[in-house]
Amino acid sequence: MKNKFFRVFFFVFFILFVSSKNIYADETYSLKMKDNLIVSQVSTKINKLIDEKWNSVTIKYVVALDKTLKKLDEKTRAYQIINEIKKKIVSHTNEINIKEQKNEEDTLKNEVFDLKYTPTTDFKEFKIDIGEVRNYRLTLNNTERNSLWRENYKYSEKLIDSAQEWSDFSLSKWELTHKRNSSDSYYDYWKINSRFADREIVCKNVNWITHTESIWRWYYKCSDDNCTEKLKNSLNDVFSMYLKEKNQSSRPHYDWIVRSEFQNIWVWIAIKQKSDNNFEFYITTHMCTELK
Image (tube, rainbow, N blue to C red; front, top):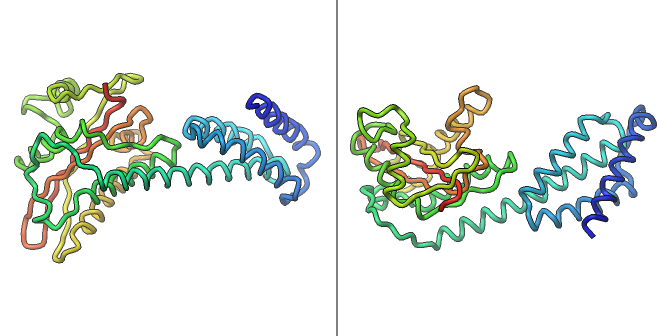
C-alpha cells in the first residue's frame, strides 16, 4: 500500500514539474477544487506516516519539497499545490510537537526524581518553583529544535546529580568555569568525561559526539512573590544570547541546543542573594546522546 502511494505521489510531482515551466509559467493560479483534492490526499497520507515516525519522515519530505519548490516558478499551479502540501505537513508536525511537549511537561510536574546529591539552594526560601523553571528552559530548547526538525530533548534522571553539583560548586567559588582543577585547560573534555564516569554517566558515541556541558551566570531582581517569573524572564534573556550565535562562525552555545545527536538533558540552578532584591544564579546544563 505504501509503495503504491509513493508511486502515485511522485508521479503527480513528476507530471506537475515537467508541465509547469512550459505550460503554466505565464499564468497565475489559485487552488481550485481538484487542486485542493490533491493537496488533501497527499498530505493526509504523509501525515499518517508522520504520526508513526514524524521526525525522520518530516525531514525527508520537507527537504524534498523545498528542493522541488526552488526549481519552480511561484506563479505556477505546480508550485502552489506543492507549497500547500508542505504547509499542511509543517502545520501537522507542529501540532504533534506541541502535544508531545505538553505531555512531557505534565509528566515532569508529577515525577519524583531520586536525588543522591543534596542541592545547597533552598528554592522555597527564594520563592522559586524550580520544576516550573526547568520545564520553561526545556520548552525554550525544544522550540528551537523543532524549528529545525530536531527531536525533543527529554530530561534524564541520570544527569541530575552532576548538573546540581557543578552549579553549587560554581556558586561556592563565585566563578564560572568548566575547570575541574585550576591547572586544566578551559574545557578539558576528558576531565569532564572522567567526572561523568565517576557518577555512572556514560553517553554513547554518536558521530563522534557524546556529551557536553553548558554553564552561565546571570542575575535577576525580585521584590515580591513572583520570583519564579522573574527568574524565567532572566533565563529567556540568556537563551536569547545563545540564539544570537546562530549566524556566527563560532556558535558553541547554539550548537548544543540544536545538535541532533543529543537526546538527554538536565538543567540545574544555584542561587545566591547579592542584596535586598538582587539575586545571582549559576546554571549548568548537561547534554548527552543515548545513555548507556
